[in-house]
Amino acid sequence: MHNAQIHGYLAVPQSGHGPGVLVLHAWWGLTGFFQDLCDRLAAQGFIAFAPDLYHGKTAATVEQAKELRSGLSRTQATREVVAAAEYLRGLDAVTGAGLGVIGFSLGANYALGLSLDEPDMVRTVVVFYGARAADYSRARAAYLGQFAATDEWVAASGVKKLEKSLRSANRAVTFHVYEGTGHWFFEQDRPEAYNAEAAELAWQRTVEFLRSTLAG
Image 1 (cartoon, rainbow, N blue to C red):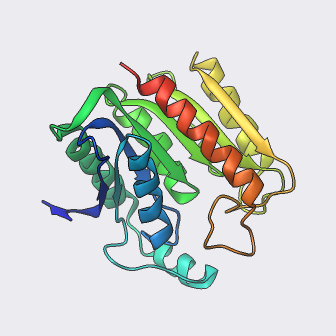
Image 2: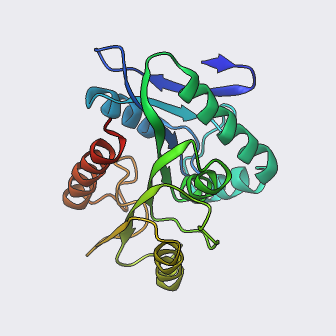
Image 3: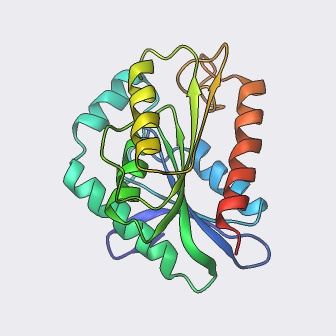
């Protein structure tokens, strides 16, 4: 879909209305997995929108992903994430006072940033294996973190620092670490990393968290 300069994938539940959830993809781009995730969220009653930060390009390998990420303008991507959130919030079908945001790795960094840049818009944030060092005193969201026990891409110290920063800002924080998992454990199209048991538990926790924080 296209709206101004926003490109992405929108999924709406059968009811035609529900809380809005923004999905921010990993450095692979807006692959089928993230589109399917929007559909899964819609099946749970949410209106899900995933902006395409790479504008149609996707990566199948780490090397390709690195190349796409290196070409991504942080300023432009941040602007597009905000525009996507404003688009989603502006839909008549979206209910509730604020949005949920789910970010994966690269997308987790932007999800955390959005909660700082737009504190009145973002009500809840779910991050998968991604962190961002910052002062979160301006944020108003509740945070759920889903992390791998062994992650060569995200330092455990960075996760601890994020949790400490959120708690010092008096944010509601719940972090989970999944034993026997590595980076991308939630992504079914990454067979070298996917962990079905951990992914299912993380999914259940994500849905419950979104429901509890976006209700009303």
